[in-house]
Amino acid sequence: MSLADRPITILIAALGGEGGGVMAEWLMHAAQRCDFPAQATSIPGVAQRTGATTYYLEIFPTARAELAGREPVMALTPSPGHVDVMVASELVEAARAMQNGYVVPDRTVFIASTHRIYATTEKMQMGDGRYDSARVIEAARKLARKAVLFDMQSLAQRSGTVINAVLFGAIAGSGALPLPREACEAAIGEHGRGAAASLAGFKAGFELAQGAPMPAAAKPPVAPRGAQEVIELGVARLHDYQGNAYAELYLRRLKSVGADSQLLAEVARHLAVWMSYEDIIRVADLKTRATRFERVRREVGAREGEPVIVIDYLKPGVEEAASLLPPWLGRRVVEWARRRGKLDTLNVGMHIRTSGIPGYLTMKALAWLKPWRPFSFRYQEEQQRIERWLAAIREAAPRSTSLAIEIADCARLLKGYGETYRRGLSSFLAILDALVENPPAADPAAQAAAIRKARDAALADPEGKSLHQTLGKPVVWLSKAS
Image (cartoon, rainbow, N blue to C red):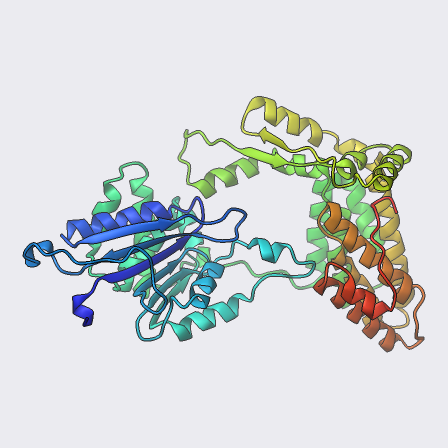
């Protein structure tokens, strides 16, 4: 078949809640307005951000009136190398499309948003598991016949709509389909509810696809770089976390580290995160804030007065409950559970409707325990470890700033909860024992290199095998009470 004798193939990959199905309907309605034969199918995605729902459409670019009663034969599923328009609502979905062969240089117009919603595999990593966005964008420009790439999520939020409207506008503005703008806007108008906001998002996507500049307000903020900026953010974070006295403790700890700007920035960053560790109180506090409900409403595109139901899924276990007990009691509970292998088997799954009064008050009651936090088991344990870490940094700083920074960066191992936290803590303590407090070499440069190598091994392999080989001895998983 020549290009004029076959359907135009369109593959859409969208995440849940992004209106991919609605966008497919808009395309179908626009095609029908042009009297083009069209067909659409969909394949559901997988939960927990491991895959998008895909929508496959074929549009035959000849009016039925000219077909003299004949009907084109259309496929139900896409074929690698035979997709004319590939649409991805997020950058990793764009990468998946390229990996699966749906984007080819001689055929495909590639339309994708460059914002990120991190996949489960990225969040599972001990270190920074994020995919390199720049490499995905570079590959998209090379592999596609034409690439339309920009942050469509920010435009959607600015227009008060969902990303599907901006994507639809980008499709129409790209010129990849024989669908006039008027037909696409009329298809949106047929849905009635939310049409005005959707049309605003469509307009923004259409104009950017045709070369209009990105609005200044949609550009990402510049990240802070200097030590003083990091410290100011840390003070604000810890004041919010536990109050003025806690923020002042943060400043006193930083003052004891020294005045080297690079070292101070690293310690300030890690210390602020460590001191604001997430416990039940913190989670409940964040989930009951007005700003959180406003953000949820904005993300789902809810209009003023429209009800939004928010249900939070929690699964606290022995450690989370014991973390709030007095130190003497919390330690006994954790040790009891550890000896009996119950640390990960007594978790209680709960669905709490935080948008309702009973659920909200339940979460708020936990948030009101903030004044109790300094008297809790977890607080005492974390402060002791922080002081041990800071003491090692202070001891190393006069010998070598590079060595002190490597020690400071070991705090990257402490993250998550449950088994993930225990493994990170075990790796952290193993490095602290073997390479920081009992260094195998007196040379600061050699010690810094050994710490960096061990830390990288621990971040790359959560099971601890790489760290075991690096240290020459096994890493023993510990409980939080250890």
